[in-house]
Length: 577
Image (tube, rainbow, N blue to C red; front, side, top):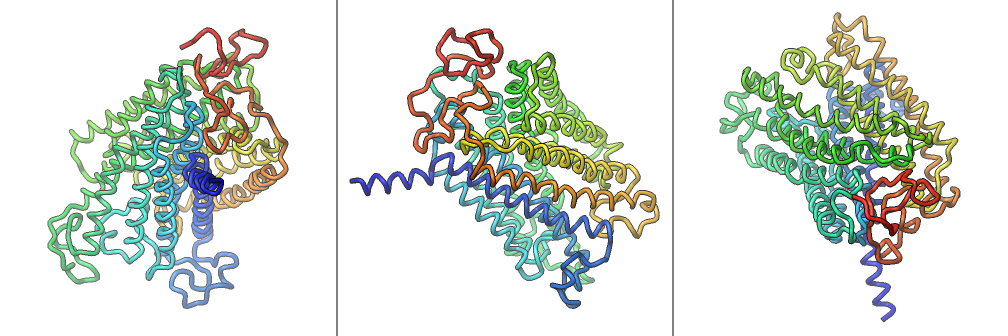
């Protein structure tokens, strides 16, 4: 009987939401590290075109197809760009936000013992890992990985080497993972809330994960279908995305034709623009929880933020074609997508303004997680403001294929979303490990990271405004109009390598704190949400030692009730909304 109990407990541990969440976090951070390594190689090529990469000249001989003598070839540059973008979006940032923090924290925050479908969550994790390994394995395929960018536009992607097939298989596996995550989070939040946890008592982070789950559920299927169609184009001779009259190396392409390359763009961007909010919404949710805790006051306009998040999710599915103004859709369709793009900025501004007003009058504690959370807001604002010219066809068309777009998008995802991820790691590390990370090492991590993030991406904005095209493997060295701003390539590259060095204090802090960090009680930040009522770390089975009930809202700070300036959601007393 004891053996059976131990065996059953082992099975449960594999399907426990905390194991799944931590596994997602570990894998996603590993993929993020890989993607960062790829972009460092690209940045070297942009700063010093044609010069051998350090150390690579000793490894690769002069006959190597991708790095002869350590010097990067144009095709390999494109392959690095394709894998960098794909890994960061599909295997790093989104999985750590939804699969990692979502799987780990949502059940704790609503008082649930586990996710609604534990085995499905484990299957989703396995699908994610398989997709990641397929992506990385494409480096060893004949011809190397996909070289069509993270957007994989046909007809080029339909005639690419084997690496493109592996890219499509990897994306399909990630889709299955996202589907499992979405179903699990929606069912868990709707069905497994603790007694008294009404919807308006949910923390804003839980709301952000709920909207994100609906986006994954509704927006990912078109890309999954498109991946299957492109696979049939590549492997079975169909022509869903291949038009008539294609000529490859002087020879007509032997396909039936009649397909549309623009069809892929519509299917891809129908997922890829909501995917931007898959990255942003959980980040906003995490920052909101950290703001409330470190200002010692409730969020300003919590209910308005919830409504704005739902409206943001809905509108994000009606703006995809602003990525396609160059295709010549016509003035009527341009006007529609220009309008929806301007409208979708409104709920973002509502949430951002609520966060800004939440700081007003607060007794702010400048902890390490709060520093990253504070830096998130201006970085996200720069990303949003630089996106406004891209909402209009008249300004989008000249800016679209320039570094301006790269700078805009990265301000949202890199110093924006990744700052929120760092803030969340520092904030919830005590709950996960029972130990606290070192503050000095945290400051040594934050300040250089803030500086060098801007050294990388602000030059891209200026280069784009000067007309420097993106996707050029030499950074524009062969174009006369780029000469005045080419020096910014070296500035951004030096910033990228300095940013890599700036992560060493974080890595040292993380692993040192896991082993020898200062032990803390279950609520070291004196927070109010339900996860802080659980032990640190939470119990293996069930999270909480006793049955839990909720009596109040998520941010009961400075209410004047009791001697402390905070009240946990499960504390008995007069019920609040």
